[in-house]
Length: 470
Image (tube, helix red, strand yellow):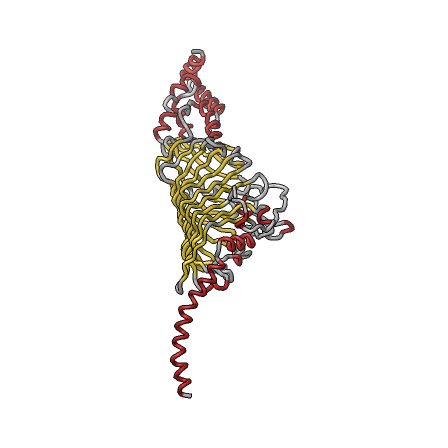
């Protein structure tokens, strides 16, 4: 009996040592068979409404954690290769992908991998390129990829009107989309980052595209708990990149470019439905090198203020475009495809400042906007616009004293020594409705007041009549 007891006392440590050595080896062998590019592609296509490609998959495993590296990853629209169940290795290469990444790296907890779960600690993507199409009708191509496998888009009778909230599917049912329960990672993710990304957003109806280049996005302190979204549903964000609006045609027109640095907070999921419906509140610094070249809203403002020539205000040399001459700050909120300005802001250009009022909004889902703005000329541009005012009044209006016109213009249009015009722009951003909201002097009333003043002074009246016939 004692001999048998001694035997187990000697054997047990040896068996434990063997298990400690064999377990990682066995786990690594099993995982290597599960985490092949082909199997990962099949898992992605079995979950999402897409076609996937993957060049390499490499796993480094230890007791403390594992790192999974995926190279040459691509996601595209679901096609016949997926529908017909063709093995990923036997397919033709994907010609047009919505998303590509040179490398995806996931740092994960080791043991959940044995049960087919990925509990991520860090997710990093390098060399990302996204080519997202916004069709004239229906949803964008990226959102289509995130639908569950087998999903089919239902025809929609119309586009959502500007300001109208998304109502979900037909008959009041919620739309099927990415749900918090579908996440392949744990509730806590220390860091997720996208670096060196290029994002193309092509708007078919308007023949334009929004290009994000040199994009870096980092989310930290990510807390998403599917069972307690009301308490744990948060991430901190940092963003850097250049946004360019241009024509979709090769070599086409460039409307403008903004270089942005941003940080803020995100609520990734809707706490009630669990759907991926992020809410963002961010501060963006618009830095030097940004510019506006063509903007339909400002083009219409420029035509509207052409009427100022009736008062001797010359704006022929004013160009409502150019380079940003100083950094600007924008505080922006995002929800349901709508971007809303939270505080008054100004963009500073060479000849003018463009003031943007709090509450101004852009609805990306309907391409609608409601901007309340102010155009503020620099002191130098204001002096140039009013330089010939007295001469104009003496030559054209004659009976009106130049100082009277100047006083009325200062009361209506001058703020802190700068010519300022308030306006509102609404509707389609490509063809906006622009209305000046500044109270301009009434020329007819101006002349009536001038005549009334002249009748009080016979000498001035005679002098005014003589001027009319000069």
